[in-house]
Length: 309
Image 1 (cartoon, rainbow, N blue to C red):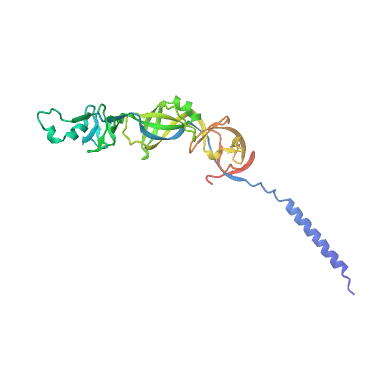
Image 2: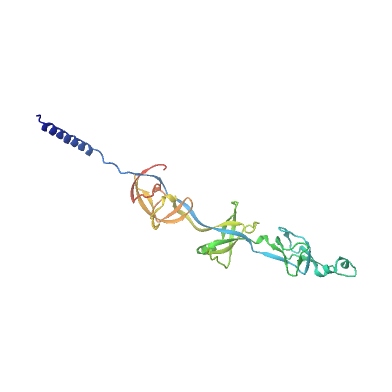
């Protein structure tokens, strides 16, 4: 019978030697470097910043006048129609009295009867005819409104200001009025109307256009009011700003070198579509911050700089 103990012992010894060699080889390898997040670096800049409030508004005319019938009778002639420009002292309607209509044309043409029964209605004010309520042949009584006049120069923009911004709006003199076609006009904040919308809690103001511009009434426009202005603000792209879940703490990631970034606390300032103001950061335009890829980075983070993500 052959003795198998020695070969088994030899195989066991060879396996121990091989494991020891592998262990020595692994121990000599350099430790694996931690994973680095790819980020894009940039610099904060100093720029003027303006904060605006944009509100809905509608055009309206504040000066209207009525042309009334001066006698009871029938409308013999209407000299105006919608959109006509009327001057002060212009004859706009001709009325035939009820008595003249009852007597008939033959009696009125009698030279012995000095009655015409024709009464001219004159406009006391100038303006544009916006409504005509009676046509030729209609019966009217004394005092009826025959037509409505609107003074074009009384055009105003009625804007609805959230109550919390009322003081800021009152402090501003000029605003920008944007028309539906994209044209922007200049307006001046004027009268505060003594009313409040219960649903939206907005306060109506009237703004006048300067110079005057003829526009249709009830045209929907937007009004932009400047609220704050900073001549030299430290700004950065909005993607550079990070915050906690409660949005009570804000910070940016400042680069110490090309591979290490730390949190730099910041206070949120004014913002627009492309920039956000950073306050109380201690940063200067020469510092480097992460402008892309900073989301979720810890206070001290290993990073790798790239040109674009």
